[in-house]
Length: 361
Image (cartoon, rainbow, N blue to C red; front, side, top):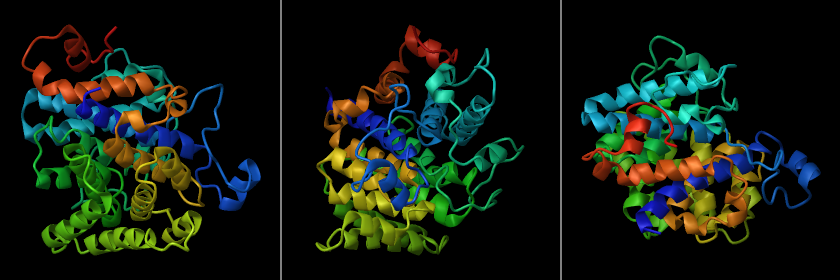
C-alpha cells in the first residue's frame, strides 16, 4: 500500500478503533472497569452483536473531512469555514430520530454507522442547532470538555487537499472545536491536535517527543500573546512527556495524574500513550482507555496520532474486522489522498459523492 494512503487510513481507522474500544468504559471509574473486565482492565473490544460501535468522536471528524472536500472542490479557502459549519450541522441532523434525508451535502450522512445516535456530548447538538455558532473570539458555550476535540483531526487530515498553511491549520483546528466548545483550553487543544496530525502525515517517521516539544515551543512563540491559555496546554503536554521518563510510574498512575477529563487533559493522556507505546498500537490502545476519565476521547486521539504515524498496516486485524464503519473510513481516506488529482478530471464516483451528496455504488 502507498505510504500516504496507509497514513491517512491509519489515522481515520485508528481514531475509530480507539473510540469504539473506549466507548465501552467511558466515564467508568477504574474500580468499575476492573469489576467488569478483571484486574488488567479492558484488553480489547466489548462487542455488541459482533460490532464495535463508533461514536461522535469518529462521526464528527468524518463529516468535517467530507465538508472540507466540498470546500476544496470550490477552490476558495474563504469557503472552508462555511463548509465546516454545513458538515457539522448535517451531522447534528443525523442524530435525530429519523432516517437519512433525501438530499444531503455529505455523502457519509447516508451511511447508517455514521449517523447512529451516539453523541458523547449532547450540548453540541444544542450549539449546532443555533442560528450562530461559536468562534474562539465569540463563544456560544464555554465548555472545556472534549466532546468536539476530535473534530480538529479533520483539519490535519485535510491540510494538503485544502492547501492549508500552519496558521490556517491552527485557526481552523481551533475553530472546529470552538463552534461548540468555547473555552480556550478546549479549542487550543484542538489547534495543537490538528497541527500534530498534519505534521505526522507530512513526516510519519519523525520521533514523537521532539515533535510534541517543537509544537509546544511554536505555539508559545506564535500564539501565547493572543491566547495566554496556550501555556496551560503546553504545560500539560510537557507533563505527559516527563511522565513517560519515570520508570517506576505505571501507565494507570500516569493517566490518573493527568485526569483525562477535560480536553487538554485528554490530549495529554493521548500524548503519553503514544509515546509510552510508540511502536505498538495495541498496547497504546490498552493504556489509552484504562483509567477513570474520558476513555473514548483519549482512545480516539491516541488512535488518530499513532495511526497517522505507523500507518494502517500497524493496526491489528482483530480491531479492523469488527469495525462496522471501516470500509467507509478507508474510502474517505482514499478520497483525501486522491482529491487534488481527481478534482481536475471528471469522475463518476467523485461526482456522485461530492456533487450529488450520495455514496458511490
